[in-house]
Length: 285
Image 1 (cartoon, rainbow, N blue to C red):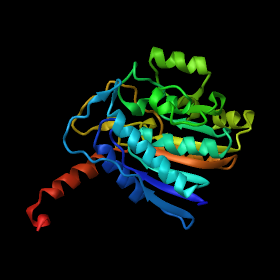
Image 2: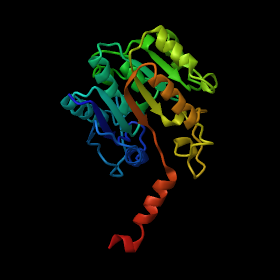
Image 3: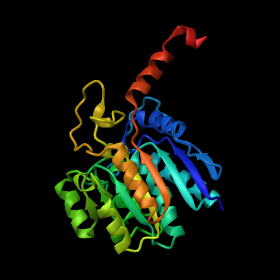
């Protein structure tokens, strides 16, 4: 058994945005390593310019299922006690969190730091990255939910930094009684999350960090901060890196953080510079 598995999963098809793959690789390069960490990469089909088509109401469903199973196979081979995964779109959290919940007897707590609830289903939305938490709870996309051996317990799931949800998403959240704390409630302290941890006696926790929980005014490597001025019709995050660092630090003193998934990194300036350099004749020799 491995102590910590560091998993690179440059998956982009879940959000149908090839830039997510570049963001995942840069994120992995930026993050420090540790002596107890084993590194692995999930093979992901690269963008070949072909249009991704919907299957059962989900864009690239079969491709994403293959990549999910590849991730699960790698994780099973290492049998880690902890997993850090760098993505890619938000769907990269499914295989690691499903494995950890099974490993720890269905008692895994999950903190979902995200501007969006990620509990859609194919009738509500066509991109799988918006269904990942639903899948882990045994709902979402039935084909992906079937890959989860032990669904998460709703009382052991909490949102942090969540913005407005659709009427359908709100109904699901109410039915499952999912806890949440807004960016305003977490702005100066982590009390709502710490109270939830203590009330549910959560001994092991996985954290999903969708970087779009951050305010695009202060952190620009996000879908909502495209330099060409493209406007995305969805709520954007309102938190800062300093607040997220404080929350994770506070949590880590209260419980054993066994999982971390970081997703949806879109470093526009680095990507544009990469593409610029690729066009220079002297660099092609």
